[in-house]
Amino acid sequence: MKRLTLVLPLSILLTFLLLFSAFGSVWDAGIILFNMPIALLGGLVGLAAVGMTLSVSAAVGFIALLGQAVLNGVLVVKRDPDPARPRRAPVDRDDRGRARPACARC
Image (cartoon, rainbow, N blue to C red; front, side):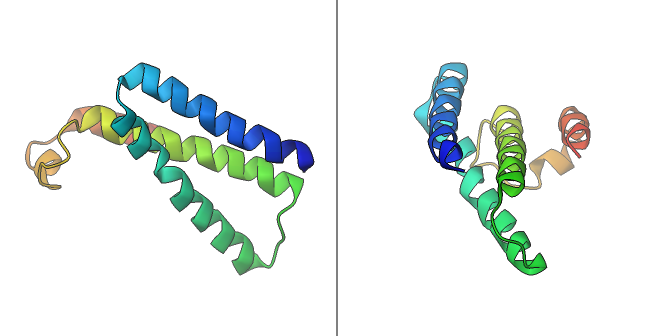
């Protein structure tokens, strides 16, 4: 568990640097990484709901959960470059290009 306290912040920093180099914007990388605390909160609520404590296997599950949260953020930023657009706009224009990646991660 002690090793994970070192590896997790380093992996988040490395993820941020990779996202920044891929998108070229601190803002986009920050939006993507903002999904991580929300996913962590949901995971902690799930652990509390079943009465489990944070163990090594749960921590590995959290790492996988954070990976999925980052993937979700990448899909949102990549497919919707204008966040001021109304939320129903992809539905109104029948955005099939987004449906495939969204279903692939389910």
